[in-house]
Image 1 (spheres, rainbow, N blue to C red):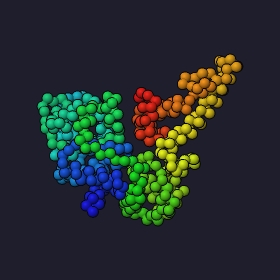
Image 2 (tube, helix red, strand yellow):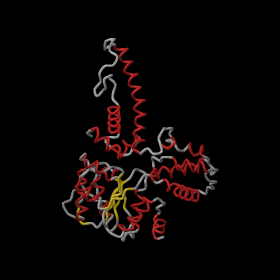
Image 3 (cartoon, rainbow, N blue to C red):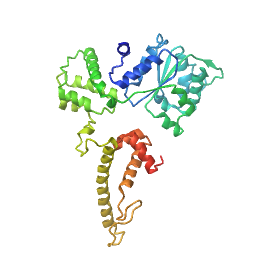
Image 4 (cartoon, rainbow, N blue to C red):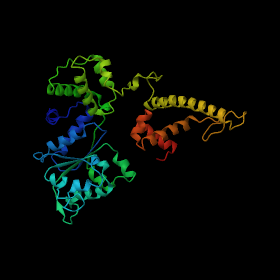
Length: 374
């Protein structure tokens, strides 16, 4: 009951086990001054969690200060965070306090922390360690009492490996790491969120909504919500306004889900009940590879006919990593698909796995198996 009360007080709309566990962590860390790193895809509600931590803390009497690190030009971010003295640079016509001074005694949310330049990360680390900083253009060391919460949709460990984020700052930030799962992994939260957004928006805009049919509700549950909670909220608001509050069926709802994709379990695949997840995933890859192989062979034959670059009696020019017939092996085609997905997503394994429709665990195993160097 205390957990439910906490959720109501701080606007956390969820019933899934994953979110219940996050609420328990928030209740533990909120009364302390420990640094918290909140990670998750765009739109999952990272700011909601940050606001809940602040509201339940001893600093709640002061306003939470939020800074979007990704929205500030690199040349100005130090001035924005730490302030500057008059005349310290061309446009510095007067002294200005930075966010660390403004947030003294309160909580500072550094959103999109993964976008922060390396040079600024050094100064941020100093503030986190001893509360000291200096304004741009000043040699005077100042002190601040700020509790820092950082949020990002990036994989900071991956950024560290590619030298785009300082490892010492990464480990300092993640004293407590709260990872919010995407909405598609906690579908039991969708009905609660829909009900909440409908009630909130209809009350605010004096709209009488007649509700969703069963098939519309089922579609809302099945949709993969790439934009997460933010996309759900925007979709609900659009539906209520543009449909004039009338009762909506699945066809009505589908118009507002522009990237709608049927759930994986609806695919007509010959998967046996006792088949393992990895076997099913491999079958998905195999089917894609078979289609790809046919396209490759057609393209090769077309090129051979046009260029006449090989003798007429040569049916299958030998290809690297091919079998005796000059055709790519299944393993090599699978390897190339994985390499291609990783390149498309700049090494982001989570996105690459989603692109290939396999689990991250399977992707990791395949990378090791094929000796793929990222």
